Length: 141
Length: 141
DNA sequence: TTGACATCGTTGCAATCGCAACGGTATTTT
DNA sequence: AAAATACCGTTGCGATTGCAACGATGTCAA
Image (tube, rainbow over all chains, first blue to last red; front, side, top):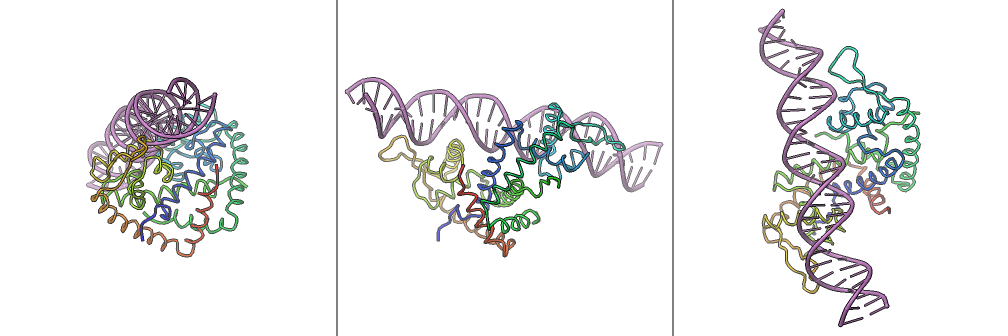
């Protein structure tokens, strides 16, 4: 039997992911003019308090350089504050400003609505997808 | 309750997809030095016979420009032949050379092994993932 | 304590990507 | 039949990305 790309899991995963990412990116782009890395940094800061570039890099699947640049842009926009870490002067302490916090509250609602919409589309398959993603993300290498 | 990126479907989908893509890309990079677009073009040509750039663009989720450039590189490498479409001179007819076909036979085995490995990792969640991806990919906009 | 080594964030750079414009060809309209 | 329109593949170009190197700081070992 011949090989079909459409039946190939990595391909299908990639197509689905970029499609969904774009759909959602259009929303926060319209709301706040954010890029994907900026959104991820903000979202992580929202529930993490003061945090270093390295932390975000490790937790949020973004290269150090992208976190660094995104943080700079967000600082420029007044959404994020950079300060010095108390004891380790190599570290930068990132946290949301009040403007950043206010924005994130709006974005959270948008994100939750979007996710609800997705779950509705997925319907009975939502649970299966979620479990499968868990496995794929945890899986080594 | 606070918002957590790790529970957000678009984010998790994106992380899983890039992770899996890289794992697989490492395999065909080692085997044949191919990039992702090159792999996709080859894979599509393998089961589609003579086909235009536009066809691949539409079916394989790659921008026209990437298909065009990938096809040129593959032609350079002797894996793909470009000829003229019989009746419509705007079209390019792409097809595998015998070298390309031989390579694809090796790559198919690698791809199928990889997919089998993934399915084993996913185990009982494989079916759910597959159905969910179907829905996400079909969904419009 | 001092020197080797590790870690952090930033920056430079090359590769990749997606969009838009272009020349060339076909199709439709008048 | 001519003009307007639509479509195809290529190319140019700006934006994004990931990697690697760097300066600065911190840690560990001798």
